[in-house]
Image (cartoon, rainbow, N blue to C red; front, side):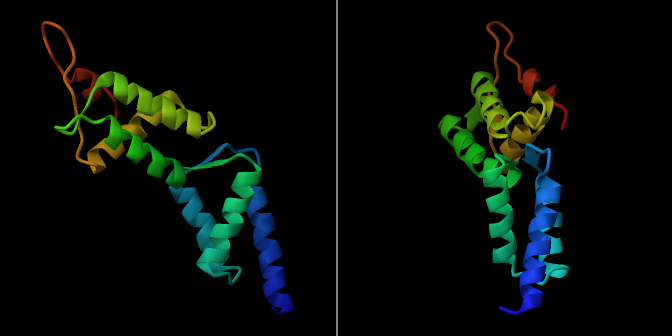
Length: 144
């Protein structure tokens, strides 16, 4: 490894520290920008840049949206019934899970929007609630 490569690695490590400082959550756009900088500006491979970013986030207890999304999608699939519908209580559980995994780095409304987007990506439908008049209004009220 040449001195230039070592210098690029150390500079990228410092950039990652700077970008993650004071944060609890990094969304996928921010993650992509950091990785792009590592590859384009500092001459790292994508695997090296990902490894350095993951190391920094693990050490700082910072959540990455991509990692949370994988486990939240699995949870939604598990909570859905055989007709691919998710009940309101189960949706609320998925939102609480997402928010907890994000280490409080996002608001409850933002977590709801993200889980709703995941449901749409997975082709899951909301289950109607109510005793006399059954409705999916609870789901429609979540801003997209």
